Length: 196
Image 1 (cartoon, one colour):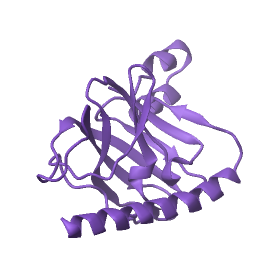
Image 2 (tube, one colour; image 1 turned 180 degrees about the horizontal axis):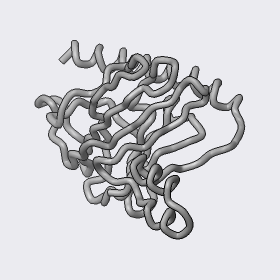
Image 3 (cartoon, helix red, strand yellow; image 1 turned 60 degrees about the vertical axis):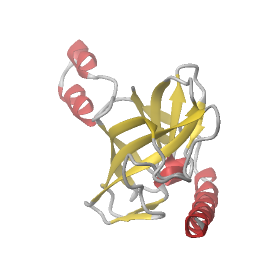
Image 4 (cartoon, one colour; image 1 turned 90 degrees about the horizontal axis):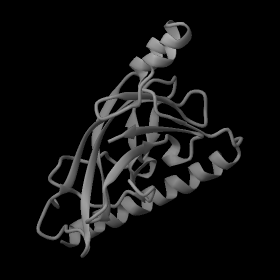
C-alpha cells in the first residue's frame, strides 16, 4: 500500500508540473478555441463532397472514431481515438475504491503522434467526461481493472501510437453524455468531443 501511495504521489506531482508548464505556454497563444465533433473519416468525406452532400456526410464522433487534434505548436498534432468506455469500472485492487456515492468510469484512448515532434504529455490531464446535465469531470489517479493507464508523461515518437486508459470518478447517478480530449494537458485551443 505504501508503494501505491508513493507512485500516486509521484504521478500527481509530475502531472501538476507538466500542466503548469503547458498552462504558461497555452496562455501565450490566442483565444481561437474550437470543439471538433467530426471524426476524420466524415471530415474527409465532407471535404471531397460538394454542396449539401458534404454537410450530410459529416457526423458526430462516437466510440471508435478518431479526431485529428492540433496543439499549441504547429509541430504538435495527434490523431486521438476513443476506443472504449468502461463505466462503473472496478478498482485494480482492494484498496482502490470510488468515494461513497461515486463510481469509476475508465476511458481508453489511442493516441497517434502525427506532427513533426514527439507527443510528450500527461494524457490524464487532457481528458474530461461530461454528464447529461453539462457537468464536467476531470480525471482521477486510480487504476482500474479496465486496463493499463498511460505512463506519465507519455512520450510517443512521430508516427507511433500509444494505448491507455484514463479514469474518472463521477457521481453514481451521473449519466455520461460526452467525452473531450485536448492536447497540451487540455490547454490547446482545439478540443475533440465524442458523443456517447
